Image (cartoon, rainbow, N blue to C red; front, side, top):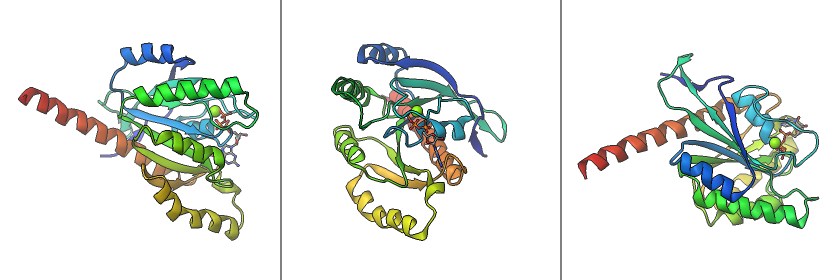
Length: 230
Ligand SMILES: Nc1nc2c(ncn2[C@@H]2O[C@H](COP(=O)(O)OP(=O)(O)OP(=O)(O)O)[C@@H](O)[C@H]2O)c(=O)[nH]1
Ligand SMILES: [Mg+2]
């Protein structure tokens, strides 16, 4: 049995810009299963989404900091190329963090919105933290992981733009960082190295996403049996 992300099945549902709006949405959608993407501005979150879910799912921008809202999509998995019986899953594109030119007000908005988001989101949502392979673990990334400490959750780390690492030396810098990063970011399950442009490394990321979705569905099933026994 082979599940895949059903190409072009992701449909945009809603853009959210305030905790109150998110609260309302969550009340109508409790216990969701899916993934959310987060990273510094311009690391290629939207590009990764388009490569995984089908082009034109998310807006790719030349100007950093374009995604300011929480963008919610629904998507499906296919089974052996056919429609699967599984329920729809959720994909959330989060506003980028650490945009250097961002005003104090915008930073405050991000803190409030994301604080609310992570505090209330279903544990069935895996976090995909995207970083730029050329500039890994920047101050903004460190700050984000510090912020995340308050909200332990299932997460993976994805280094994008690997196509831009041309020399062995550049790749070695990233390799060298791996052990210390796994120690520093304890909640990171796995690290992936990919390129939205060349699509290299993305099948592994897709497998990780699917494994997470199926695992969460299994957890729901066991919970239901326990409910009945109780
Ligand atoms: N070479 C290369 N360029 C990429 C890759 N992924 C994204 N880019 C480029 O990086 C720029 C930013 O990409 P986006 O996908 O808009 O980045 P984002 O993280 O969604 O940015 P914001 O929404 O503004 O925070 C665009 O010019 C992309 O074409 C990649 O894997 N390789
Ligand atoms: Mg974006």
